[in-house]
Length: 292
Image (tube, rainbow, N blue to C red; front, side, top):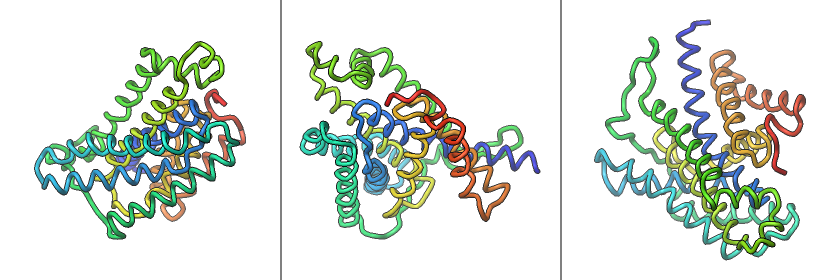
């Protein structure tokens, strides 16, 4: 096997893994704190991509259009998620998980129709800013600059999540609520606000993932289906509700997917799912500790 090609594919896989991690971390955070399997998380990711396209298009092809899109799109998605949480989801936290799954599935269908009404079925694309166009040579391998940007953003998001959950009062309360929400409520803390904030963070990460992926792929209806399946698999093999498990699962998923393209392109899609099966056979509860 050509070492240069392998290195190139590994870097592509790692950059893809960063997108998967950002989206999966949001899903895992909501799952861990709220115990809500949010099926419309993928729709928020798709909404983030479309909003990023709209912002970038309205601002023209200036060098700062994508940066503004990366800033605004996650905020718009987080606001949409917060409205859904406050008006609808907050009334269902005490219901069974099956009810929550059905509710979030219904919201997914509604969101997808709204996106179709707003943007139509056409394919869209976003051009990276000039600073992130082209490629640079790393260890003899030409790597797209935007992929290197993603490789930097992923660890930055992971570090920010760690600081939020371990160094801020709100983050510590959210972690405590994930373990024992009744005890947190007994201490006089408004658990409802904690849940709203946790959901806001999860939706923001979904929107950020959608905005980041916009320059790398076609923005179209249905892009939420693949990502939500992958995100749930990553959260499952990483450990339900464990953000670091989401990082480990994303790396495993992204790298096996990329290496599969190099080893057996016709069946590359099988490799990450085969890795998921093997992980669950060895560790049915996931690679890291589940908070469920």
